[in-house]
Image 1: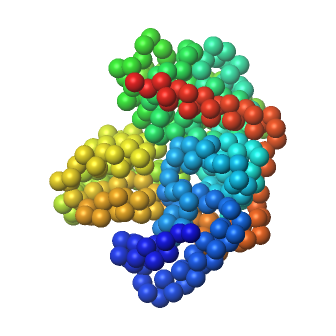
Image 2 (image 1 turned 90 degrees about the horizontal axis):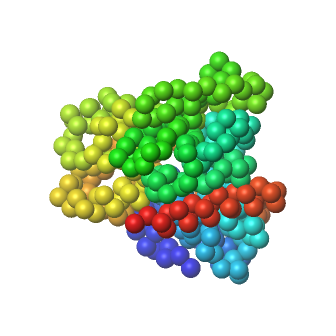
Image 3 (image 1 turned 90 degrees about the vertical axis):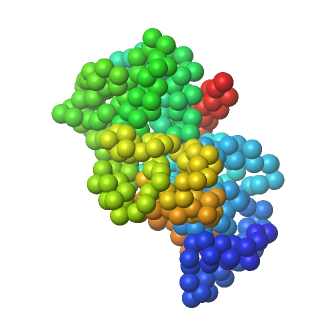
Length: 366
């Protein structure tokens, strides 16, 4: 059973929910906890979910943490509710093919995942037959099933450094790829590192990040991904002006940013990394009290819980897709076991293989 009194206290003191809001929230959390216990179910929540969902979840975390947790779930757990976006629910299903996986809102998509499909991936593979192709975890299970490995913001450097093949290709999104590969400038070992950039005028644009040279691959318009570039609709919204304004109007001690931001934003940050890296970085900065974080607004929840003595600032951009999940449809999916995620056997096997390869390559990091 969850410690509901402790959750209520955190929602009140750390996350500043009012008494009237708690009067609505707490009965829902109590019912979610009761049904979860009765069904021996597990609830997973991404860090971009609202605080009540993060707190009632069995595991809240970034993509890597959720994948690791799902991979280790015991056999007696038969139902998993993933309060995430859809590609993450697919990821959990591929790691737990024998379990029932449901998602509160199946329309919780991702602009990054919509920027790559298996047709474009196959065109890239045809043109670079000796390449190692790594997919950012923000991709569909079908794309994952045909790449050599998956990576997250937490382990991308390790994956790209350790994987065999030349060139090494990272896809999507372009800003993430550029930030990660540029940060590996001294670890190239004679390899070329290419990033998928966009679809432009009937061509796939690939960029050699360290030289800036672009290479084109023809693609039929009907084969192209849904979106012409696979970048994050949230992280795209942050600007250099945001950082300048917060530094000017507040006593900001440190700026931390997610690697999906534009490179110009990443260059202005003191640290660039995923959720866990942000937390680890701040652990080493006890005297830095005022923190500006440049990522999805609900990231404030784990940061404030980890560092209640610090004050966190953000321009506060929300992910509309993540916000499709709420306490009402979470409870509904748990109670009725609806919006089940299903994958074909070939896609399941391929996606699991590339995920397992991620864990193997990550473990090779010195």
